[in-house]
Amino acid sequence: MSTIVIGLSLSFLLFLLAAGLTLIFGMLGVINFAHGALYMLGAYVCYQIVHWTGSFWIGLAFAPLVVAALGAAMEVVTLRPVYNRDHIYQLLLTFGFILVIEESVRLIWGLDYKQVPTPDLFSQPIALFGSQIPSYRLFIIGFGALVSVLLFLLLDRSKLGMVIRAASSDSEMAQTLGVDVAKVRTAVFALGSGLAALGGVVAAPLVPIELGMGFSVIIDCFVVVIIGGLGNIKGAIFAALLLGMARAAGFTYAPEWVELITFVLLIVTLMTRPSGLFSRKGRAA
Amino acid sequence: MSMLRLDQILMAAAVAAMIVFAMVSTSEESLNLISLILIWGLLAIGFDLIFGMAGMLSFGHAAMFGAGGYALALLAPQFGFLPSLLVAAVAGAALAFLLSVFALRVSGLFFSLLTLSLAQLVYILASTKLRAFTGGLDGIPGVLRPALFGVDFYNNRNYFYFLVVVFVIGVAIMALLRISPFGSALKAVQANDVRAEQIGYNVQRLRQCAFMISGAYAGVSGALLASLMFYVSPQMLHWSTSGDVLIMTLLGGKGTLLGPVLGVAVFEVLKEELSQFTEHWYGVLGIVFILCTIFLPNGIAGLFAVLGRGRKGASK
Image 1: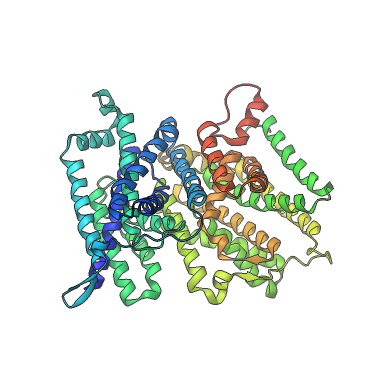
Image 2: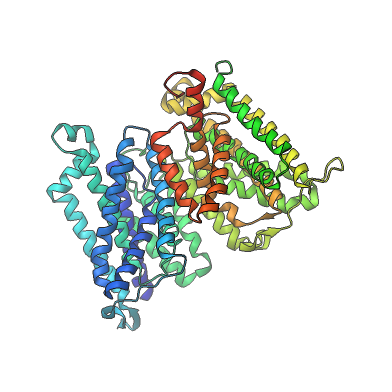
């Protein structure tokens, strides 16, 4: 039972991150290498807010906003001038972000591990089907599900979502029809950065907050979007579930090999369906 | 390929001047710095074969670089230095082949993600599962230097001459490759892979060959670094190695023979100078990198090209 709970909470965490990554890719055609760095930054900002206010919930509310604002600024200042160039240059820029963000974090918070305490409301484990379940894990599952539903509603039902989808599938046509594509790009980059930070905040009470946390997560995230098909949010949720559950099962039954599970899944997927399990068109990019 | 252009001669002169400087200078520090530049330069030259010529952005070169280092560290005591250096090249190429079996099933940005993921797999394997061979996170100390013609290569100045010889051979081979039909074919693949396929090129095979040659350069370069430092560790396999070589190549100018070497030189000198002022030099480097990506997409070689032509427009 606890394997399932841990697996699901891991899945939703991965999904929050992968959703941001795949949204940005769908809209901007950019793979945001700095996604893991933004996740890490989210956790650090949350730590700082908790440090000042003592409340995890204020951190949950504001840290993603702070990082989203930063994401918007990065997009406007650096990415916007190079959209008409080869995609490689945009990827290179996001790689540059990693260096700057990591170094800034080191400058501000130093190298020590930081810790965010589990919020009081969820600090006690609860008994479920005869096993003790950390209740914070249940919170992640519920919260992750809520955010996923909101994200689907935003993209599928709202006016803004329609504009985003239109601009993703044909930015020139959308521009001609009066959509300010530049603004939509900035908004999507901000949304994606915010989602990454949200992932970082949610993970903050579970893991030690340190500089390397971004990179270890970004690989899993890449694997999720590759398995799910890049730019495909519904594929991402399935892939996140697959990877999250596989890792949780690995922790329980074969802890020696858990680091390799991710790669096995990746390789098997690529050997069978090179463009991802749920790709709509042929090969992307 | 056109005749030698002025900018290429200028770049060659700059690299030659750097080597001569190391020879006449008595400073151990600059000797060490320029040794590093030659070694990383080989890596960058090989990296540019796929990045600048074939348009493939690999984030996995750390794997081949490290493989070369480990190959030399493990084999040199038994088989001698030169054979092991050769094996390091083969190991780099073989690992590149293995990665390409998976990574070349996809193209474009996916290729970058996959090479990154697979290189990370190699990093994890080397630091945990293969501890018996690789010494885990501690690495392998006491990597040998060459023993040839009775020269003492444990003297850094003598080892530097050895590096110069390997470097010049590496550059010469690459120069020939670039003007060979193989080089032109790679350019065709970069410009338009569908059209190249239609003309009759086997695009996948070309990409795979280029990746393997690039892997061999990475292997040799990793072996030389291990020998310079007397030490090899998983740090060489870390993804930041792949990132560094990318920064160097882009700083220097992708798609040019010697541009990447100049990029390495600027990177290493910046690192040396910046780290004296601030421990946060990597962040400053990140900002320099971002600015170069936006404003100087052809790197230092682009500046040379402007000099060489005396008019606007860098080579594309």
